[in-house]
Image (cartoon, rainbow, N blue to C red):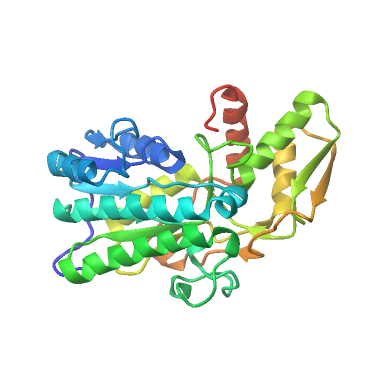
Length: 322
């Protein structure tokens, strides 16, 4: 714990800057903070503030003087995007993070939460994956560049704590989903991809859906509204140098998850698995004991979360992010 800092409830009138407030996580953070009475939220779109523009980021934070910064801005994508454009994922995420964290340090932002990803852990880490597994083995090759960028962000936060004694923290969410997700045919993660495929099959009357991989890898999913709740909880209840895993502590096979999606969209046809496509990490389940011991647990079940996200997708299919 940082010297002289004890976690406490945040002042609801404090200036809170949410970097990436229009993305999946950032928009959920905005909704949750607003629902909890925060009256001075600040966000900037890419056209208003390019986070790759270092002088602009420094100028913005110097002028805004936030008391809290949540770094939810990142270049993200699924297996195909990460494996096709690794240089872009590494370079852009490093630039975004370094610009924001350096500028926040220059502005002496008192409280900062950096959001990473569970892909930071080794491909064959012991399950469930504890925070101590960081940097103990080789990464999953299909997203190693993105993972390295996120690991650099964690270490920068830890370094600021050691060198400058600021109570900054990091949270590592498991696979996230919910309203505002990326439904791009080539850039989406597995759950929105499944929702698109099964919804399209119902719309077109198709009797078969083909999914990537074998269906056997196990994945943990957390609704993004639960993630936002966990972030505020950590800001108010936790301080420490290690990153904190955020998840449900439960996983299912991709095939099982596909069945839940099929039921949610009303699909009754068959499913084929294309094993020529990559499976990715065989299992990725987080040990969430640190978070649970601090007093937080998720409130949205996978079935309910998928059903509500499918309903949102179908209602917004003409304007979803792609």
